[in-house]
Length: 305
Ligand code: NAD
Image: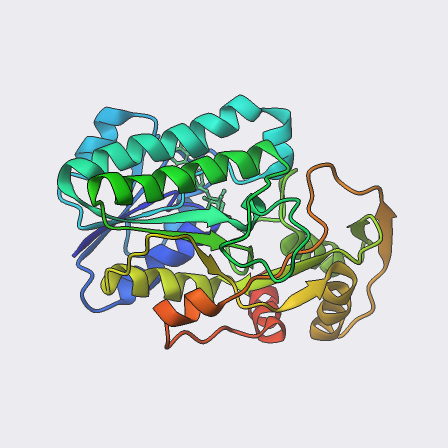
């Protein structure tokens, strides 16, 4: 089996390329990445071949997908603040990029496993977030991911393309960078704590997130590819473990075995208040899946730093 991973040099992509290369039944892994936020080093020792270029390049997509059996589509500009700064660029990479990828896959009926996001729920107050809730994205990022997910499922319905759209929640783990302006909360906190600096908390810190260790995410993605899992409806990829940001700082302090200091700053525009996944659909499609618990995941992430 030949698998293409768009965004393969990114955080989740680098972990996924390793996981796929280690799986029986996968013969070749190709990472297609424009290295806008990804790094070639993320693929060192992964067994994957890096093709540097953009999913907005239709000729390149056709070449890379020529012999592919499956695509895991992770390429995106994956940041809410960045989408507020440049909404059109966010739409181009996330929505138009997905549409071009689906067009390339349609011609050869390639299985597409696409990364959607919990940000599509946006302002819906209900918890847990189950997939039949209305979607109300609060940011251009959320809107672009919803468009991408809608196109993915529409290509399944309209053209019989085998598709699976998975809504990732807050994924964390090795390879997730702390050193850029739009970095995610877990690596930013670990980095600050290790340097004895205060952890910056936006708002009161009682906002909640459903954190998923990247090892769990890539195990599900690899399983989806190998078993050719499809669904007509979106599927959450998280396990309903709701943790506040303040609780995260306490767990991290315990894992690091050192006290941490906090610095509160104003809330960020576009951020949702609470997030928690309903995991019933995920567990029906992936009955064997075991989620790595938060403390164990934090330990493995700290060990990588
Ligand atoms: P990442 O930035 O590490 O990975 C995205 C990759 O896509 C990068 O390597 C980047 O260089 C590449 N890329 C961007 N635009 C491209 C283009 N036009 N052509 C080719 N490659 C391009 O981010 P990540 O956290 O690994 O996210 C992977 C996917 O998961 C994204 O689709 C993101 O929206 C989704 N997601 C992530 C999370 C999370 O918590 N990390 C949560 C929800 C959804």
